[in-house]
Length: 71
Image (cartoon, rainbow, N blue to C red; front, side):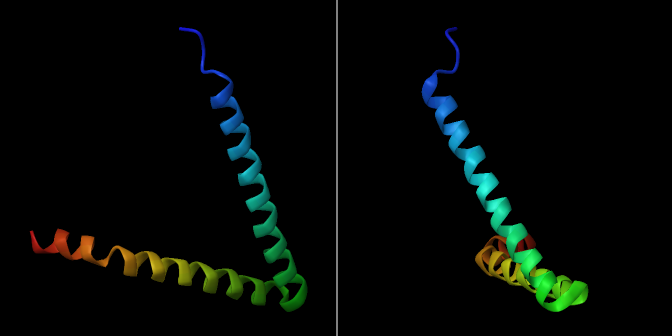
């Protein structure tokens, strides 16, 4: 067992950096919404974005849900 190798660690570093950048972008959007619309506006913005993602996810998995209820 020689270890995981350099390729694994380079991919791991890339994933960590990508997650960090995505986190910064999300916090930038939340901070901008909070500054522009206040706490309630920011909260409604975040809820609206999450609702859109939930709706898209639900639409893409509707057939799987139908298959589970038919059985």
